[in-house]
Amino acid sequence: MDLILQPWPWYVSGALIAFVMWLLLYFGKSFGFSNNLRTLCTMCGADKFAPFFQFNWKTQSWNLFFLVGAGLGGYIATNFLTTPDYVVAISEATIDDLGALGFAAPTAYAPASQFGMEALSSWQNILILALGGFMVGFGARYAGGCTSGHAISGISDLQPASLLAVVGFFIGGLAMTHLIFPLIY
Amino acid sequence: MKQIKFLLAGTLFGIIMFKSEAASWYRIQEMFRFQDFHMYGIIGLAVAIGVPMVWFMKKNNAKDFSGAPIVFNPKAWSIPRYLFGGIIFGLGWALSGACPGPIVVNIGAGFVGYIIVLIAALFGTFLYGVLRDKLPH
Image (cartoon, rainbow over all chains, first blue to last red):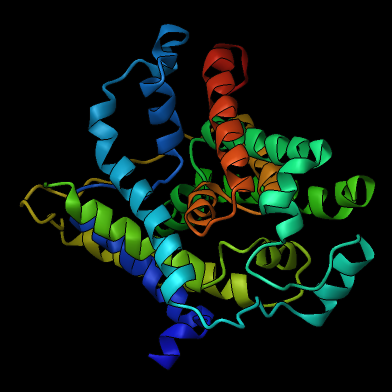
């Protein structure tokens, strides 16, 4: 039990993610989380605005169950599968870099100033969250997949398109981290 | 009730994402600074297992639990679609510290800020759907 309560090392986590991919293939589906974004838009009536959303969303209902499960997993893990003193043990170099941008060293899983209740009292912060989410949703559908669909499933299937998408993920991520972060924080 | 297995698979995925710290904003910042092996180990190992696994399934015409063949759909090659789409996604991934799966995991873990991220992601997807014909693919 103690091993489960500790953070899981990369070699356990990576193998388990491959297991989840296998599980979905065995269930006759494929691992691609951001498909849910399109499904949810369709369910909200987006099919009246663009042909992209005109499909039978019920064919993707299995993925919505997977999505609800992911949220449930986050709830279970944080409430029952961690120790009370848990913080994310990132490297000293990252703590220093984030400190220079004004972020305190980790005291939880994510910075409360960005994602906790208090984060909603700053309109600048809400703007950052909205902009980040907007680009995730736009980019994931433009690229036809996110980390699960391209970096894990697509590269496992040796798809050149997925490799290019992952190169794009990193160009965008590195530009945000190294060029844009110093301007906004 | 046939869907329960997907709920359970999703729950397992959510626990893995949380416990591996792949859903932590801090780990994503660390990853894009190349300051620890952790995230590269996770993704690298998943792919190192996934490549021979998919190869083996294709070679043996693997069947799913119902006996139907497991199909892998090749992705049509295009530079602008994957490059531009990927870059926009990467900008958002680093800014919000989460890709779509971890957004939901963080909401479950009680970080309410990610509710805004999720709603905005739905707006992003909606705008993509509306502009789709005008974008280079």
